[in-house]
Length: 172
Image (cartoon, rainbow, N blue to C red; front, side, top):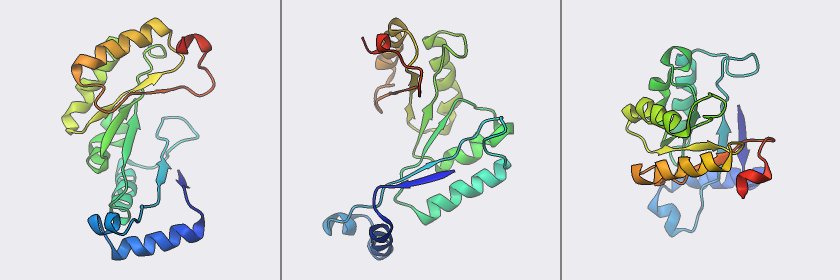
């Protein structure tokens, strides 16, 4: 789990104290921006990731929501199995859900993978952002974007991510 702030420690403490006194519209009127917070909880069934129970992960999300009600929480996942980390328990704390639509890793088509994700995630009633594989061939990326457009999948612009494996051909 990592926390990344866009301000130094002193500014962060000052802003959090002000945030506790002023909420919402008052902050905007005062020209105060909330500190930017990114938290990455890696939840995968491998040795170097989350080792807690679904109940413990829910506690983490609940505490973040309670301590930082202004935070935007994005739940990014490719696993939709409740028995592993309890997506049904943590999704209510998220503002939106983000996929990891790695159809090339899962040996399927862009359309099949994204339809599967929609089918799995829509029960949560949250907006869905699609995380597309930057190492996919460009013709598949085009198909993915063409599939998303008429289905509202561009409301939150998709992200293209793949650390270390994206080739120049993907961007051409």
